[in-house]
Length: 369
Image (cartoon, rainbow, N blue to C red):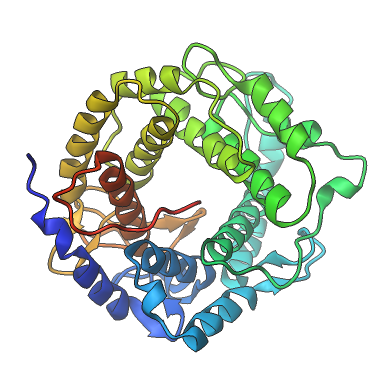
């Protein structure tokens, strides 16, 4: 059996790492060094990452109630009204300003993209669309983080479906031949449907039924050539289905596909792969022993990302994550980073739960992204 002793000290080492990243109260740096100006000033996402890690490790429960409330209030302080976004979205001004700075630089590029998008073989995203998706992702992350610890956002996010816009209209605006990206938009709507009173569950179920592929078990409009798109796209949709309490359509097919297509050693790829196998295994016992062997292999791989001298994990092998929703935050270096640490801890928590090994004498909490 694999040696799991190194896992038993992770709570302490990661706790020290988070303390070293802490700037002021509930504000955290994305890494210990080599930060860009944006990396030094972005706040919302990194606070959510840190809270999630504390929740998984169980250290959130050890905080005083007053500290918990202050942290929740800090995250809620990012809710704002800006006519460019749905009402009461969570806005990090550094993120907004970065895209505003890009606006002038990308005006010509966006004009070219507009022209190219008229041709069927091209599909590019303009800068403004990228910003809207980034704000949506940050809003969804803030809301799901708060709900994870039994809290709520102070003000409901504006419902974009109170006009003539339908769920199908909205989701079909995204390229479902690239479900990794499009699936994230589906997932956010599932979160809003459950937590913000959107009441669009039936429409979301109908859309998922339309996109599911019976051969791979994933969700897309056209079979992607890259297995990363198929698996990571499935992960995004499954996170959404979990929020609306719907089961995975073809878990056995997804298990077969995942077993035949191992992930590369990068934060999102590993956690998405582990998540899909974990959630499918909760629904069926199909190939359970094989899955656990694979998950142990992934645990061995994850250890390669652990930077022992810092106490955290890097997003890439021997390299930190460099960007956050398109914004450069870290000059690449062989160091741990907050994003990589959160993803690795989350993946490990699912692996441990799925193994059901009685020799493991600690149990971490399960994250609902």
